[in-house]
Image 1 (cartoon, helix red, strand yellow):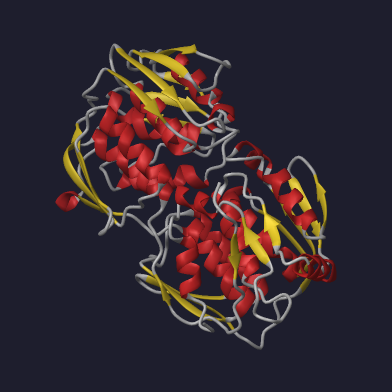
Image 2 (cartoon, one colour):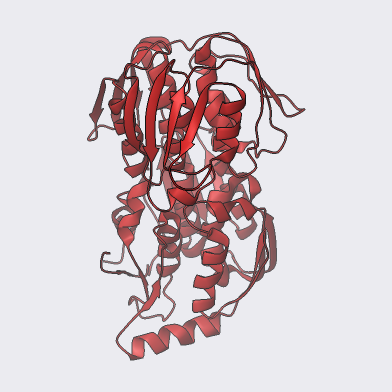
Length: 454
């Protein structure tokens, strides 16, 4: 475990231009699709983080040729037209939910393959049953569980899909459905999936990425049925695909702008991004954030004279839940009372995010009422100040536990930039800041680059 990182507050409004890493969600989806195409594809703007490196290594273990240029954010992969070169492998999926689910479904395309999959201790507790049940119903794989049923580690014997229908329970994670929608076009038969209980934001991302690779008709229907037709992935024009910047990562800088005022320009975000987390920026208009999308850049600002404080805030984060932590962490500075709903499923992510957020906010002197699907935060800035002063009196700072969860580190990192004690000195520290390597290895360096009072 690394030494806690003290966050120096910002003392001036923001100004500057920011480049963000590529989207993890898009990078790992594009890697799977590129592997299923026929021939070489170049992915530009790719993210290099723990999750994407795990996906790259898994595909290499399966025999795919991949060249990774980290300096220029480029990945080149040679697709095999739906074939998987190696019929056996042992794969470690770490704690990467996308890699865990996408690779499991991907392997089920192989005829007569035998694979062993495992992950980090946290991954062994994350939900896989909905995907495993669907692959079993399709006749595409049989599973032997080495510890707990329906969890990693397991062995799978793969057969390719033998049937054309399955029910899919993706209530625990939309990645379960996305894994099937990504891989099944390569099985060259028509398949229907019935999945009425899924959050569609990231499923829509999956479908929009597929449209760049020859699958022009979306599998989604309004009734919760998903029809996968008998067609194959095609390489895009010039065999190039551009990955959007990560809008989950952008959420921290939207929040930073709200806290400090001023303006930021974030490069390479299209006027209409495909990621659902763009909705978080719209939510922050409640706190006077202004957004001006351009062709390849978003300009955001919060006028210095505007007030960000509200008595009551009540938002449903179900469709962009990765950002609820961003908002909850700074809620004590925004609203007298904040209600966040639609987050039950986040209890099954890197950690139980609902309970962990409640725990950290209570440590900061806030009153938090937790239900299965919500948090109500009753803010007490005076209590936060007193907690910080008490820590300072002993030569310490308030320390945030991150639970090996990158989003806790980044969300509370934004809170720490607020000059709570009005002296420009650190009052908040982040434990295990390296956990940001999962999606944004340079987060704290990027954050520090925007502090102009050095």
